[in-house]
Length: 193
Picture (cartoon, rainbow, N blue to C red):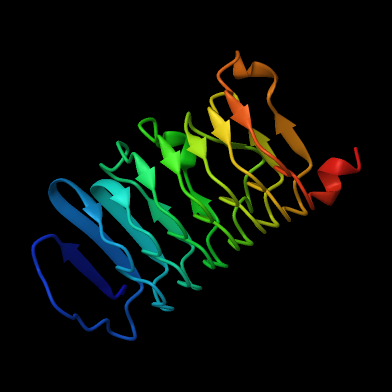
């Protein structure tokens, strides 16, 4: 059986997270933001489902090293992923970014150090959004990216993504408004082509 907890809006104060907790379901009655540091450093969580979440706060899941899957349920209208929201989630690989049709901004270092992000995926399609500095820094398992909808890419956005071999930007149809410095610095496989 799975040990799980449901996080519902409205409570305040400190909460205890059992050591056997593996699944988290966020159920907001209406659209709401998941607060910063909500589950930061909780190293037993493996699966998260977000319902009616419009924003993921800074460091919300930072350092959740066992986290492998994030599902969006009814959160497909997620608009913002703030700084370091998933940074250091070294096991995270299963996250369907392409399904986030309302995504507008992914802030600095949001997925930094997610070294398994991209495992099992031939190509990851990035939704129409602005990706800030170092958003995917050191995501060493990213292999191929589809930029057809990307609006803007910040400094060193994919810095150190050593597994990145292919970036499809040809179908962007002029949506890409800005790409800043060192976007692909340290992407040795991509730069060797």
